Amino acid sequence: MTESSPNSPESQRPRLSLVAPTYNEAGRLAELVAAVFAVFSAHSIDGELVIVDDNSPDGTGALADELATRYRMKVVHRSGKLGLGTAVIAGFAAATAGICGVIDADLSHPPALVPRMLAAIERGDADFVIGSRYIPGGGTKDWGAARLLMSRAACLLSRPVTPVVDATSGFFLVRREIAEGVQIEAGGFKICLELLVRGQATRIAEVPYVFAGRTVGDSKMNLREATGYLQQLLALWQYRRAHPIARTYTRLA
Ligand SMILES: Nc1nc2c(ncn2[C@@H]2O[C@H](COP(=O)(O)OP(=O)(O)O)[C@@H](O)[C@H]2O)c(=O)[nH]1
Ligand SMILES: [Mg+2]
Image (tube, rainbow, N blue to C red; front, side, top):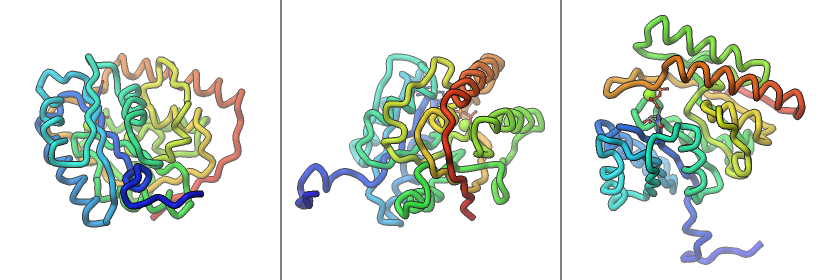
């Protein structure tokens, strides 16, 4: 192993690349970016933020470009709304750190939890850490009964393929090599679950957080998404049967 000099590309590589997919998030993006970098700075994390924007009609992409002149950010522009799962994969491809993460751009996920998730991976306690709404200490704010029921049902349905309680979470950190090379199927809409099942993570941890209700913009849940999820589950069940794997699972307080 060679030691890197202070100015070599290796030493300039961030410790963490956080990916935030955006579609019409102009209303909250600046706040998210400021919050993420405030946390990075408070915890001395040399991190980068990768925005993947799908040509949002509200101008999120241009706003992200402007923010990138002031922060350590990369902006990936895609031609149109191509979906959350492929946005995450595109973000990982543009990311440069050995540990990658995903966070929603609408401030549903607390950036303040990121340092603990990162530490769990860096300590070697886990190679995939999931922010969980449904383990003790976690929760959702301002969700109606119907949305909560749908979400809980989606998580329950995933239990045959993963020990993770909140496998549909959009908030997670993973060692880059685990996500790399994973073939995402067309229906791979819940990207965390897809990577959990098809990736080679053997040490998995969940950490609780409270999901903040969306106050600006629309949510993407609809019947088409639900059908896509069931198709994804079926494919993952088949994949898991053909590719069994031994895993450890822990919960971080
Ligand atoms: N690039 C991209 N981002 C998306 C797409 N759909 C949703 N997002 C972003 O993904 C995150 C989660 O989406 P959201 O609608 O808040 O999902 P929900 O909170 O689970 O209902 C947000 O930051 C959205 O802006 C998409 O098709 N492409
Ligand atoms: Mg949201």
